[in-house]
Length: 316
Image (cartoon, rainbow, N blue to C red; front, top):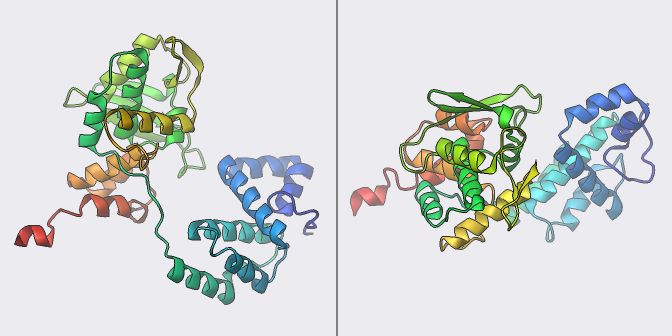
């Protein structure tokens, strides 16, 4: 039997009902939905219910909701809100109004009028990364940030993945390092993924940079990337993903770049784009970054190959 909508708080009331009232089912639900996804669903559904929506909703109500917010919310945000509404319906055994021709036609019109281009983090390309590294000093914080930038770039890591690496995640081999991620955005079943970080051929070797940081910080267990205060004191807890973004922006600004287009994602985007520029096959790039398909990787490959075999370059 479907749970009642109640006061509209939370994700889908059926999910809340299962989590709160059926402990074993709730445990599996909690494990099966990533925390960030769960938080996003709750927030998006709360917005729909506060507007006046209900579960179940008609297709006319959902179409009216997206139309009412077409001028204030991004297309990507509206799409995510529809996903939350759809999940809420299906969790209670209702058919999703999001799939109706009316809602689809409404969203199609919004996309055509507003466009769907999303603002993307500017990739920190190989040459720019080297310039950023050259502008750094030799303090303990410099050693940490140098290792973080190089490992983040070399592994094509997401911010959360970079922060999750600990000493037990690292295996030292003849060719460099093998980093094992227990879970990532595209590995919600926690099968684990291994990433090879080879010794570098330039002075900016990610393996040597990491070794220098760990040695100077005296880190032999726990998180490898940690907060360092202005007195050079290294804290025990790992860094947050937000801190990675701040470090990237701080370091690119110190090298003379405008920091605003950059973020923690710039390291991952920089590897993918730089590899595409160098002619690395897409399947090899995906093996490093963990992108689920060529489709999700395509924007980096497209940007990286804008000048490869460019028609004008061959004519003028």
